[in-house]
Length: 453
Ligand code: PLP
Image (cartoon, rainbow, N blue to C red; front, side):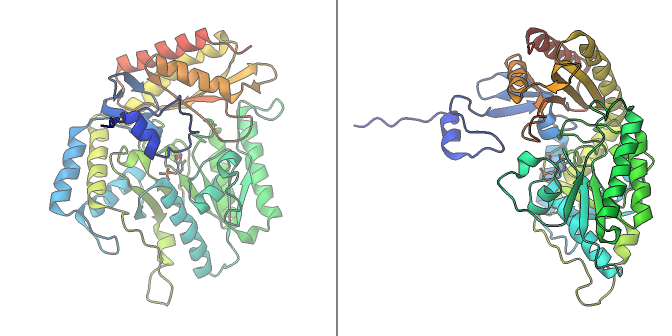
């Protein structure tokens, strides 16, 4: 009788699953995770790893929270589904809570993902201008090196050429400007001077493109996945001034920076700005369930009120605002408040940054270490004078070596040609002191053992 071979989990995975943004290499199978607890993951062979990326910058309260599982279970029993053409209790309570965290009065539009939330922002801004007597405003400006999502509009706003290459042409009307990159600067300009210069270039772009055609500007408080590029405080304030001057709406993408990640409730709260629209996802539920939000200033919503034909926002989403996802988000925010995780993010992040900053002096390839709250970037260069980036392969090697030591870190992979040279950390905000020490020990050891010459 012919022997029937039982496939291993890895073999079944490789046979059936097409993985996200990863080349298929048979000898480098995907990690099959089976359990998560706190900051730690266990794979199917029993190996343990500290996940210093919180998945994709999202498991803010850490893995294995029973209260979140219970919140989902209880809500599913009570009411598993209700489309957001109507309403339900967790959605109402969560909208109030988000406004409390935003310290504002926004209308809350629910979707499932960060990309969805940004698509909503683009669509409603175009419609807003049409209904506000300015139908020529349709263009959006965003920054090179920033990521805003995978769908055609959000990808068009994305400024990472390698995420768009071979998928073009994308949606029309999306323009890009350079972000402030204090490390690479421009000549010998200070961080503040670079930020001012980049804001001036943004204004120039608006004028050259015909100011009455610009509908909105979208940016993260700091560029995260594109290489952790942190502007000087003056930058976003200038951007907001420019938006006001030209009647342009400002969207702040808080998909990563929101919910304590940067050491404040929202990343934009580090600056003196009040965005017109704020998009959020990831940390909203700590990724226990999919949920995203487009928070829209009440003045904008006013333009959609009434019965006039085709006047309301004609956008629908089957799963957006799912009751269990909203219940989990509420419980997630309760945990963050109870455990002071926003404050913990600020102090843990400052500790990591201080400890890692020494590497810039001691390691031949560490050009810059920067961060805000629990987001840290370590930029590796071949030569500190020329700042020539190390190749992506070297960055990949560091990530792999850390993994062998039980530490998962990230990198700004597949962003823009030649500049995929930043290691990233985005650990759970709930990391213990021992977790933080483990991250530092492994990272320092691996870097000490690996130089790029
Ligand atoms: N915006 C930013 C800043 C992101 O980092 C991401 C995803 O990483 C998105 C939007 C898109 O979110 P999603 O993957 O949930 O669609």
